[in-house]
Image 1 (cartoon, rainbow, N blue to C red):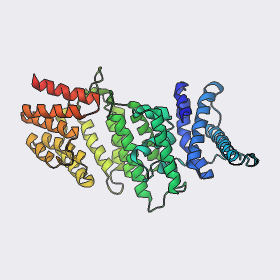
Image 2: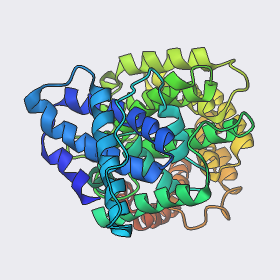
Image 3: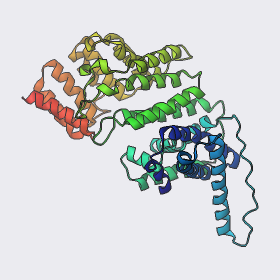
Image 4: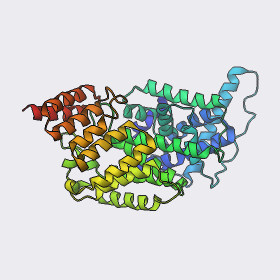
Length: 412
């Protein structure tokens, strides 16, 4: 819907924007549960958010913001229903259904909305878009901008996602105890993908999209609050905080990439590191250790090292080995190769790469890592070839500039 794109243009005060985003999934959950129509409820909530953005800055925030949004959204929903009914039968009276008073209970349906948005029936792209809109409160325009597509394309993606939920016949509500573990994994995976796109953008001229990574952290804080006993929810939040702590040092003044070993660690956010480590310490031991906790543990080792040369690479190598067994993810094996090279020499790292050649054939990261390890080994001619290949394959302009610079440095 194009109309929700106007909210950002209104220059809404941050306090009002925060209230709107916090209340959005709660109001959506109430309407979806009450009227059993997620699609119509989500449209109505977006209109209510726009109304709040228009009125609250000049009229003041209502005493009960969630109740105000709920009543406004419910009115919009009734208007939609009356309009649809009118089109079907204009001779039928359209005002038969009265709007009930806003019943604002203490029930928080945010987790249920998260489960709906991250339903396994949806593609990752659709789940990400719907989560950012329905739970994050972002407009279609904002989401489209973050993922470098036009607003119409993103609107269609969100619409298809809602239609798929509707056609699936899944009622609005919590999953069964048997379904819950898989659904929680889906939610955490979607939040992880959102953060990754913000942390290291896969396309465009910026390495980081801080608005997107910040929203992923906010949503993961919500998930952790709603799932306090889930070690992986805590692990994922810890991972995000430990990585985001390095944000200021990851690029130079020109916006170019600064590799981890060369970053000014005095610019790392120590408060985020302390919070991430505390979360990780609290999560370890809660049931089985999962992949996000292991990734967070690796990030914590890096963040705790005062200097790059103080990094405990043997421990990182062991953790990547465990993560590789757990996920069978070839990108994990790439990272393991770097850890092996740092712990045991470049030849050890290059030997690890042989295991992923076929699975990552043509991927720029394989060429980038191989070039780095070959440069470490002193084979500059081969390193130059792979740096150039990696630079030609990446769609991230900062990474392309960095890889081209590495190649030029060797060529000199």
